[in-house]
Image (tube, rainbow, N blue to C red; front, side):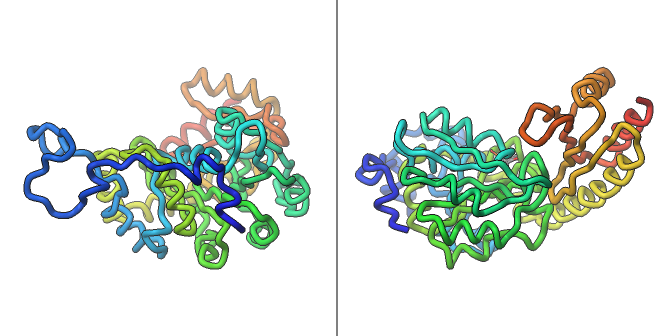
Amino acid sequence: MNLNKLLRKNIKNLVPYSSARDEFSGDGKVFLDANENPFNAPYNRYPDPLQKMLKRKISDIKGVSREQIFLGNGSDEPIDLLIRAFCEPETDNIVTIDPTYGMYQVAANINNVAIRKVSLSPGFVLDPMNVLHAVDLHTKLIFLCSPNNPSGNNLSRSAMLHIVRNFKGIVVVDEAYIDFSPGNSLLSDLQTHQNLVILQTLSKAWGLAGIRLGMAFAAPEIVAVLNKIKYPYNLNILTQQKALELLENKTVVENWVSTLISERKRVSEELEKLDIVQKINPSDANFLLVAVNNAPDLYQKLIKLGIVVRDRSKVHLCADCLRITIGSPEENDLLLKALKTF
Ligand SMILES: *Cc1c(COP(=O)(O)O)cnc(C)c1O
């Protein structure tokens, strides 16, 4: 991979904004450099633009170096920045699997970048040859998602690595649900693959969807590109503080995850007993994609009882499917009780 050839020319040549905190980040005593208000500490100060404390912590937990970490306002930010950095509008394209997370398409559409969708095989299986066949000279990015949303299954590790090895552009693997699927992360392949970007988030297993913190792990050269084009202060002080707090408290998160994984098994087994349920797709995530008799009708019946699931029946390969998030044991009981009355 040749990063300079892959990048859009204007991004390669861009001189980034240099903030006061970029130019001086040591231990000053009196900060009169950023036109901040001296009152209302600590919120009067601009946040650290490169989130050094937070990256140190994440680096320990994930076993990657700080230079391999980009932090954004949710995973949505690195998704958008990657497309903006590499794809020339009206010329370049991205390749995604189908079905998958909707944000890749939205971000491509916003940037006026074409998207080529490659259908997964029955059972939501990834065929790496199909993906590589969709690639042309203008394909800059391939988006994979494992465990995949909305199907819930892991993609095969060797299939993903086959794509990484045989594509001259960048392969983004979205691992938003990886904590529910221990042992399957491609994080350990980062060192050996310069064109691999891995997305993770604090929004799912870490229970922090509200603070908006997404992580991209990649070669330092790619991280540097993202840092160059992001908003200077993309992560606010409150988000950085709250994230640090929870990252110090990993066992709480591990307990949530093990509860959710055992609830996933229980809910799946209970659903299996119901006549209205046709198929439960195996899940490595915190949700189940369930084929039922007449999904839109069942969706409405649940809504009437105040229970909201996601109707995915119009999505490719998801006919009559509802996507059901695994909730607390009490919430899951309410769902199962309701379903038994229909
Ligand atoms: C939920 C989800 C995310 C999370 O996005 P954030 O912006 O980090 O909240 C990312 N990717 C996939 C596939 C998801 O389902």
